Amino acid sequence: MRFLLTLALVFTYLTSIAQSKNLLYGNWIKTRLTYQSGKEPTDDDTRKFEYLKFSFSQDGKFALAYNYDYKGGSFRFVLNGDTLQYGANLVHIDKLTKDSLVFTQWINGKFDNPNCLKYYFVAEPAYQKAIPLTANDIVSVNQTDTLYRASEKIYAGFKEDEGFRQLVSDAVKGLQQQTPINDHFLATFTINKAGEALGLQIINGINREFDRQFNKVFERNKKKWVPATYKGKAVNVQMKTEIRFTNYSKYPVYQRYTQLGTDAMYQGDFNLALFNFDKALKNYAEGDIYYKMALCQIMLGNIEEACSDMLKSEALDYTAATGLKRKYCH
Image 1 (tube, rainbow, N blue to C red):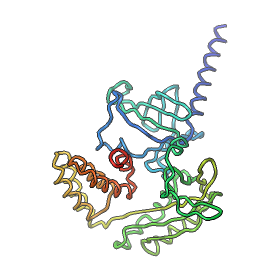
Image 2: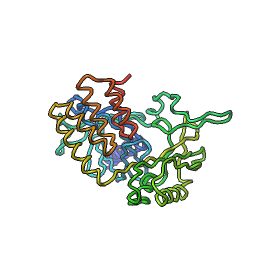
Image 3: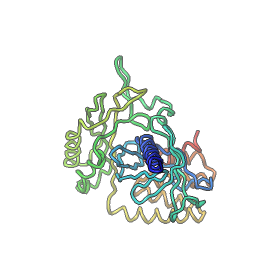
Image 4: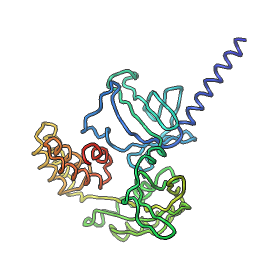
């Protein structure tokens, strides 16, 4: 009898783990971040607002990405009851349902430290459904079809573990050094309803070899996409690949003014910080710097200027600016 009871308990435990894993599989988007105490991080802590996507797959792999169309780094994950381990990180799952995931990150082996971070996630389909469709999400409409612009709401996925951006990065590594004048690569293409990439347009190239290598990666991976969906149906979506570089001779100057600006910001001299950040941006356009400029403008009461800087930061794919903009700009 005792053996049967033990067996039943083990079966119940294993069933519970299996059910939890089934709920965990898929993509999760961070919607809120607090400390265990309930206090929120300050606005200068970019973890508060940055886009964060966790992905769990049935083959036991976990991926973390800071942009909606990034694949992110891949790790193995282990779920043991209410404890989840991925890489060197250990978290306690406080809540897990079909649409909601809440966990607490440990500090020194403890989950009850007031400074432990608590993450709140929403399942990606529910997150996307809550985002309103705007005119900016549509590239074109004709009598038979609509072409959407890639965004957090609607985008195509890439099947390979490395991710399309990483494949491009590996292929063009070092080639931008041949042409120090042009520091901005921009290409667009369409992923159709069948998950095939079409219509590549290199809008702003770097040099002939760089552009040729990008085209090779594109052609090799044309059929390795997962089509975008909207309201449960596959749709055509325009994706973009944007890569920025800086002249190596300018980078030390950029770093120096960035550090001077950051030091001034944390010392409360926001005007001096803005002066140095502006000098840094003249050498290299970086979303993080525009974000810090926005914080300085907020502290000076210049909300309109802050919102302008947030838009510039967002345009450079700095996702924390989107969250900050939602708080201050209407």
